[in-house]
Amino acid sequence: MKNSVNHPVKKSGEKSFPATSMQDNKPFTEADYSLQTLLGGMSVEKFLAEHWHKKPLLVRQALPNFGDWLDRDSLSELACQDNSEGRLVQFKRGQCQLEFGPFEAEALAALPKKNWSLLVSGVNHLMPEGDWLLHRFDFIPAARLDDLMVSFAPPGGGVGPHFDSYDVFLIQGQGRRRWEISAQDDLTVVEGAPLRILREFRVDETWELEPGDMLYLPPQLAHNGVALTDCMTWSIGFRAPKAEEIVNQFLTYLQDKLELPGMYSDPTLKRQKHVAEIPSAMLDWAEKTIRAAARWDKTDITDFLGRYLSEPKSHVYFDPPTRPKSVAAFAKAIQKQGVALDARSQMLFRGNAFFINGERLEASPGLTSMLCKLADKRYLEPGDCIHEQSSEMITLLHLWYQAGYLFPAG
Ligand code: SIN
Ligand code: CO
Image (cartoon, rainbow, N blue to C red; front, side, top):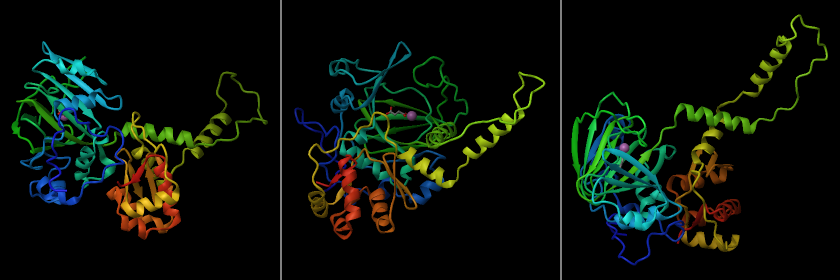
């Protein structure tokens, strides 16, 4: 496919992008895009060493001809779908107001000419182009990837000066936007506002982005994006787990895993001086029992992290095929067409432990390299599937197909 980034906007009346399932869409080919252009000629190594998680990078024409995949109307359509995560930010008399979708089409059409922004998260699950765009950033580990958010704002619109805990690549779609950044240390936010808006914002640097330009921002850097014309911004966000979140989640994981038979017993009980004093024997027993139960090693941490990071977000549901192919028909289809992960599937691995959508699979040695390829590329070519004709592989892929995790690439 030639220059797929320059995909035309659908004509009015044409069906919108597939809303829930990617099964009918072929993955885009590598030839459509150049990583060199995306990073403005900088090597990935240099970008990681000098910019990632450290300082901004502006790339003019990172995605030449980009910008026509969504416009105000088609983004509004997505924001009205039940399966989308939309937010509407409006500034009225200097006050920030926030509403959550799904929205009514009429309400979105009747918005004022200025000073609001409609943001839709998880667009990579809603249109195949979004999924394609997200995976152009596969030089960052998938364990860090969050999602693609797309926003529309009329002139003056934005979400106000703020900082994010995310690393983010902001790609300009249609229109122009002015980005202001500040290296300020004061990150105090306005009290009581529905969004974390900075109380003070001291602009250090300003850039105007045109369609196809990209700005990378590290976390905690104060920024403000203001639409100069009707404007669309595509944000690819990378999460970093918070210490509190990871420990809380791990404790819950441990709790679910624990099997603790037995109970305290005191057949040799002696009369105490103080009836209200906690017995020493009970304290010793509790300490010994808790220490024994709360033991874990790297294997437990790997298992926890793989499941946790690959767990779909709470609003994500898969669409299993309504009339699934038999194992034999499925094998034939993937040997002819290859197989692709659904855009909603998250697949990670460590060693021979594979994690898909919160589930774990211990791969036998014969399957490891093919599963690594599926996790990395999210796609197996027909040749791969023919080569890997083992019934174990086919049975596994068929199970995931029945769950809606992957499909014969059509
Ligand atoms: C946007 O308005 O599209 C991006 C918001 C942000 O700065 O994170
Ligand atoms: Co931001």
